[in-house]
View 1 (cartoon, rainbow, N blue to C red):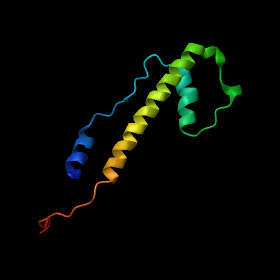
View 2 (cartoon, one colour):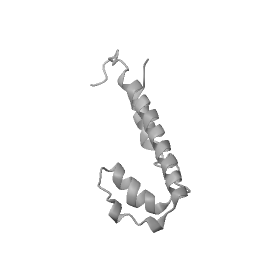
View 3 (tube, one colour):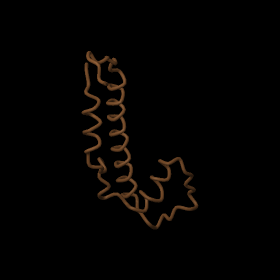
Length: 97
């Protein structure tokens, strides 16, 4: 398989940066004070969590959100693996003066 890396880089540079997994319905407190710090390998102590800020339904929605993020990460790693497995090929003509 051959891939136009210059074209790929151009398309990636033109792509609009946005969240691929919607945070709609996810509790902001859990997202910003629990999940995101944990994803950055920061310590979140139970004594610092304000349990009055959310309920059990919010935890279930956060779990679903995290699982969706994980699925997107797996798909991205598949693309990375596919690109990494492409054999390099040299140009047939000189590209410099």
